[in-house]
Structures are given as C-alpha cells and as structure tokens.
Length: 467
Image (cartoon, rainbow, N blue to C red; front, side):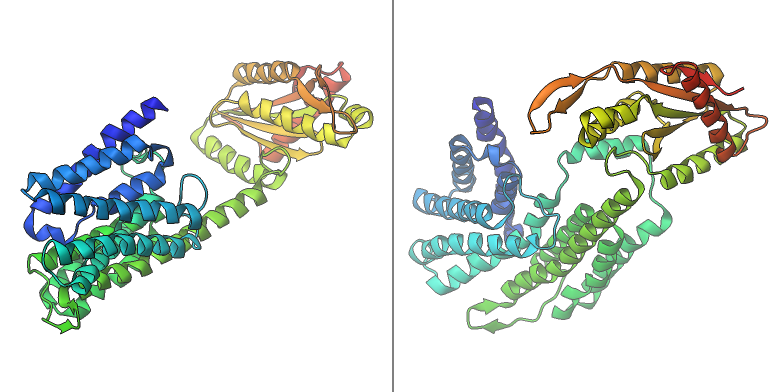
C-alpha cells in the first residue's frame, strides 16, 4: 500500500500538471481537461485515491496557477474548487456506478456517468463561482454558469473514454502493431467521412454545423468497438472547441441572459457527443451479448469444450484446408474408463466434476491449433492439424498420462469434503489422414472409434492406432 501511495503522489501530480499547462496557452483555456482527467484516473484505479495522491493533486493545482503568476488567494481558492469538483464526482460515482473499478460497458451506465458529471460540475461551480465574484469581480451567476458549463462539457467529453478504456491500452496497442495491419479499406470509410464532415463544418460555419459530424460518428459507433468510437467522438468534440477558440468555426454573436454563444456552443458540442457515445455503448453491449450467446450455443455448458455440431463444423473446415494444402492430420477418439461406475458409486454430481476435470486436462495438454470437442456422454474427440503418425501418437500418450495424474475434488452426499478422486484413466483411438489420400472427417472419426474399441478390449488406459 505504501508503494501505491507513493505512486499516486508522484504519477498523478505529474500527469495532472502537464494537463494543467493548457491554462497558460491562451485560447486553449476554453477546454480545460485537468479535472476530468484526474476524476477518470481515480475512477479507473480506485486504489490510487490515497491521501498522498489527493495532496499531490492539490500541489499540482497550486503549482499550475503560481507558475503563471496568480496570487495566493485566488490560487488556493481555485485549487479547492477543482478538488471539490473531483472529490464530489468520485463520491457520487461510488453511489451510482458499479462497485470496484468502474467500467462503461453497459447502456445503463451512461445515465449514471451523466449524473457524476453534473454533480462534479455543480460542486466546482459553487466554489469557483464565488471565487469569480469575490476575487475577480465578476457577477456570481455569470461566473457560476461559466464554471458549470465548462466543466460539465469537458467531463461529458472525456470521462466516457476513460471509463471505457481497456485495462492495458498501451500493451494492447503494441500487440496490434506486432500483428501487423488488419484493417480493410471499408473500415477506413467512417473515419474518412468523419474528417470530411469536420472540414465541411469549418467551411460552412454557423451554429448548425456543430452537429454535422454526428452521422459519421454514428457510423463509427456501428462499425468500430466502443473505446475507439468514444475516443473519436471526444477528439472531434475537442477539435470543434479549439476551432471555435481560434476562429475557424464561425458562430453568430448572441447573448441570452448570462449565456453567450461560446458557452452555448461548448455545451451543445458535449450534449451532441452523447448520442454517438450512447450508440457505441449500446452496440458494444449488443455485440458482447451475441458473442456470449454464440459461445453458449457452440460450447458444452459443463466442460466448456466444443459441442458435437460445432466440433464437426470447425474440424471439417480445418481438415478440408489441410487436404487442399497437402498436409496430414490426425484425430483422437477418447473415452473415460469405467465412467458408469463413477456415477453409480459417487453420484452424478461427482461424475460431472470428473467430466469437467478431464476436459480441462485434455485442453491443457493440447498444442496450439488442436481442437477438442465433447461428442456425448464421456466421449471426446480431438483434431490434431498437420500431425503425422509419430507426432499424433506422442500427443495421445501425453494426454493419457495427463488424465492419469488428475486428482478430482469430491464431496459426500451432505456437501462435505471427502478425499479427492484419483486413478482416472482414458482409452484413446488414433487415426491419421495421409496427405496424399485424405479421408473425410466422418471416415477418420469412424477409424478412430474402431481403434478406441480395440483399446478398451485390450485392457483400457492405452492408445491404439487404426489399421
């Protein structure tokens, strides 16, 4: 814990001070992301919210204002306003978001994130608005609305990407780079359309162009995963804010009570961004659900290996590819010895535990590319791609010995623990498909099944190869 506290005390302030430097960049003060960045970091890593980290963040806030010559009174006041906003957002998130490391992977989380943004911006605006009235001579209402508007917009834009980010984004990016380019030409169309819509917004001008990138962003939300879409949406929103700040996006001058055109545009950009973000999250949740349903449909619920139909489908496709390439393959038929006696003696619950343990042992003993399926009852099948006779025999022996070394936890009828079950064994039948005359998967499995019966007839716990 001490190491964590020191990491929070050093890393957080350094990152925060780099973001706070935008305070010194003139028009970029329209977009001031420090509070949203700090809140996002703490929500993703609650273990870093230590007293040392909060003190380090306070030091970073103070240093940023003092570095540009702000007097001590407004410096302290503004720092307390910023920390109040972040602290309030952190506390509210603990109530309305999921427990633990907060994630943004379900549609119902988006309204909760909006509540966090509203609470954080309101707490900061109350203190910061008072500072504007007392220290800077601005009207309290105008100062409060400016603070609230700015911080709410930035939080809406930046917080969702923080919460949707993968656990190790840099590691994931490096893995993708090592794997080489995998995107197709059509995958680039949404991004190209997005860039074109932004360029048209700059050329056309007017308040309506703030929504011009929305169709392209929704296309991105339907095409890309959640995190890249949220990053694209946040990036476009930031670019629009900077374009307003430097005069590239022309907005008509307007004032309604205390709200000017810049405040209206800033909040409008953030609220417009909610639409593509929500679409991305809903679509991502839908795709995750479809993947889970597909997994359940294709995998045995007890052992986690492929069901019979899914095994035949995948193994048949692999075998056809191997035959076209002139490469060999082998299949194994595997049966747990005396499995009926296990069920009769220890009960079906223990039989299920044995099935799951044997399947896990077989899966762990397979090389990459091999596939395992449960054909029914206590019978399994394995496809060994590109394996010749000797290699397949060694693989079968390796699996037999792995099962023989298993020790399966057991329970008595009342749910109490008893000595683990050991001494399991399997019989295996092996059939090899020659590269020059590859048989069909069904024929290969029939040969392996005949060899399996021969192994059982010869005393079980052995490997027999088809003639």
